[in-house]
Length: 244
Ligand code: SAH
Image (cartoon, rainbow, N blue to C red; front, side, top):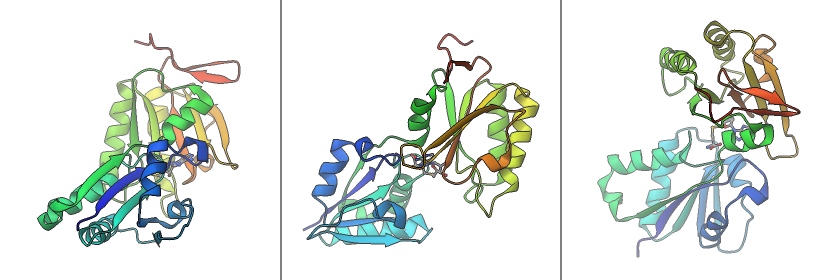
């Protein structure tokens, strides 16, 4: 009998932000596949095999899941946040496209709370008007594309959320990002660095682009940049819905 593959998002960290639907899917699984820190968030139980991997090749992980399901396993692939936001869901469909024999496997996707929405809620409502999300990692796309999109998004006056802003092996890209933003938005624009949102390490800081420093971001940070109308009210940051 063929099993199934469920691709789930575990949310940004806090247990209460895991949806009941994702909990139900996990309760019915025989196997859990994913990156080590995400699999570590799943409570072990009898009958459940955990397959933590540090394999960065998402396509391999997806193929592994589909292969297990083909022989009867009920496989959950875990991502942090939402599985469709810079995460595993696309990789599974890409694997399916390349291997039609997997089309007998039932695949479902179960949303989670993505980092930018948890960060925006913690800050107030900085994404309250039109916004976009950009992955600043140039591991899977050339930096020129990242910079082009970011410049046009700034010109279009979108509020922006940046994922994967800065890692030990990608230091100059975020420095460049801040330079482009200052060129396009000036130095008074608000920028929020939201680190480890909804975990015990949570830290949020909002500054102007003039005050922003690249070192304020790391791989546990999602960065939110306001549009031209974004402002502070008390300790909150918000973007009015009437912004032009
Ligand atoms: N699928 C995930 C994103 C994976 S990419 C989601 O929907 O949230 C990994 C990036 O997500 C990190 O580099 C960081 O920018 C962001 N991120 C994930 N969890 C976070 C958290 N709790 N707080 C702040 N940023 C987070």
